[in-house]
Image 1 (tube, rainbow, N blue to C red):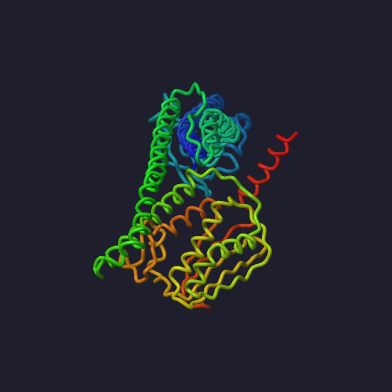
Image 2 (image 1 turned 30 degrees about the vertical axis):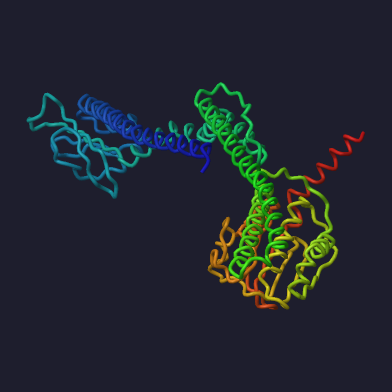
Length: 471
């Protein structure tokens, strides 16, 4: 969940809960106030009826008319008794005495409702036989309804304003998080090998340490990558010269001194030559691995014909293929690919070269391309021993060989070929799959390139830039 959404939801939840809590408290307070006001109203009506009945003790009709005009009978019910004799009552009041309570408030049920009843007697006649008693009742449901209307009138505007509050909160949070958005955009626009300092300037105190820390991290990463790149490259270059001299000397010894050596000396000289060849191969592979690293290779895209490129690689490797008497087949059609030429050549050479190395003499190699609307797949299959499925992930590790140094083949290898291939696959946003060849029973390596990749856009941008430069 994003910070923006989290803050908006949290603030709205708090506002909603507080509004609900305030509504509950307001409801309780309103009920208390309404009860007090309604009780005062009952007291006022009771005293009015009592006073009117006491003024006209012998004129029942006049008393009844005076009492009825006090308040509408649909809001209250009342009774007036003298010496337990009913003098007056409303239509919604029973003829029997509602309660025997001498004076005060009480809640009672009659005629199917809950009522709040107030009893009033003449103060100067509490114990006399000629006693006047007034009972006034009001429905509790009416009180609750009026209290709820008051609450709704107070809370409804707040509820209706919550969406507007949410909008203002969202706008305020978005504005407050704008520096983060700018920083995210600048980071996302950085190229894969761009470790330059961030240029975002912000007055937000919380982000300034973050930007400073990121700049320090980029500086340290840049220095570390530079050291790694130059170390691997320089070390490989420095090793090439003594290896070349050593290889020449070994060759001269084999040509001039091999006849003078015994069998043990000749075997040692041959082993020395093989070791020199292997070391030279390792140095070349380290240089290639360093050049094809996605974090360090400058992606220069070229429009290539894949079929022509495959034919070129097979032609370059044909002497080795003929040496082992391999039967190689190419099943391909004209396919245009946008890729880095050096990287793609290296990938194809490694795949076909590995198939040639590990396929027994007289074996078969199949190079095939399959094209559809969304992708094209390059597959190299062989009739060699293949690789166990449990090793499929390990073979992409640097310097890992199936079987270790005691590999069953006698070919020179260092375990960097498929690691280089994986670098190139990542560089072109492709996928690589290892499986058993259903046709040749050896290893099948498939590399699938998407038809629409960033390489296409990069190539078009390069062409546009060249046209602008030529103008």
